[in-house]
Amino acid sequence: MKRAKICLLVAALVMAGVGLSRADEGADPAILKNEIVLKSGPGAYMEVRHIVLKGTNEEIGKALADIAREQYNTNLVKYAEPIYARARHDYMKLNYPIMFERMKGVARSYGLSLDETDYDTSGLYYWMTAPKCSGIFIPAAAAENGHNFYASNRDYYLASMSEVLGGKRKPGEEDFSSRVFVVEMYPDKGYSSLGVGVIDLLSINIDAINSKGLSVAVLEDDTYGVERTEKDLSRLSGLYIYQIVRLIVDTCATVDEAKEAILNNKIPMAILPAHFLVMDSTGRSFIYERSAKNFGDLFVDSAEGKPVPITNHSIHDYPALDKFPAAAKDDYDTFNRYGRLDKYVRDHRGKYSMDDAGHAMSLVYGRVEEASESGYHNLPLRTLYTALVDIDERAMRVRFYLKDGERDPKTGFPELIFSEPLEFKLKPE
Image (cartoon, rainbow, N blue to C red; front, side, top):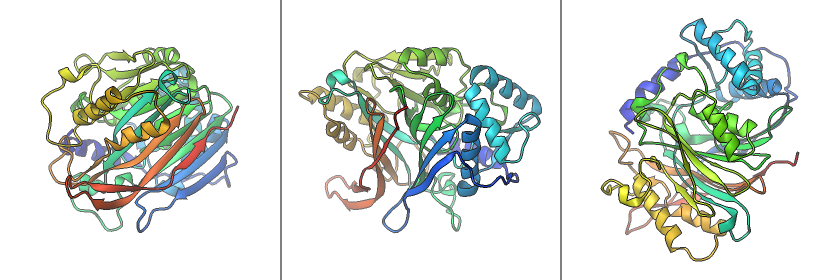
């Protein structure tokens, strides 16, 4: 994926946002917790915010919008014409009423009437990009502890938006990747959920699990190609690829229900191309992708009881190593990373512990100064966090990137220094 192509998308999204006056209604009762659990600063790259919300979906929407405005300086995207707003509202009412209620809350926070506004209240974007990533799912049949669990790395550049767009960092400009949030939601309608998110406080969780033990991990799909994605959010309809993930987490208990939700919705590939792995508490899983040829839905069902690696290329188009293109020189290339995970699985003896899954992720850390699939100037790429998600326990253990350590004299790669694990767990219903 070329940064030159990202430029047009990011610039359009940033320019589309318009600041609005916030409706002052005092402290928000839906916010049970809104704390910085990891502070950025010397020797600590990232800020991590933990948000816990409980209430109606409208109250939750308003609470997230209040946090977005006050802590992230978030603006809303304006639709190109009012007809797009009306059509989106009608779609949400029919297909995703939980989100429609949250949109009402966002409108309240911004002092808007949802019936009259032509601003999109289904997103609270604070920066635009798609993290690179790797992951592996271990079904209970292959696990030492008899639990279903997965591990994931989330990787991106240590750079500001200006630098990613090819310019120089502006005074005071933060890195794209330096602010991550962990959000727990306990709504009156829909399933409770726990997720790690970026980009959009309302809709985008890239690692998530709900109270029924359904989990979703979202990864960039470089095979699809950014040139095929919807560039103009002001004309979006339906649920874009990241929002369908949010719907699945809110409303689905099994992989079959998730498939039905996908097939019953219009899903434009917007922001940046992605595919995702859906896992449930029975040990079943599938990978969902969009066809780059005809834009159709593709389900790749996982082999029963077997580990499932995934990186940043289409599993449908490249189902086996002998289908891969010629090896790239770049250590971070998606096919190289997948190959290392595949080898780890083939060489492994016995069942897997959660520590084994964490070790697998260490084999594919992002720690290069330039990823070959991305760009026209050098920017360091690092693993921003590594998550271990116990699906049966509805719990996550996450280590966040702090800084580089010493470089290996043989490879030239830096040691990655992470925080102590931060633990998050859904409360029982």
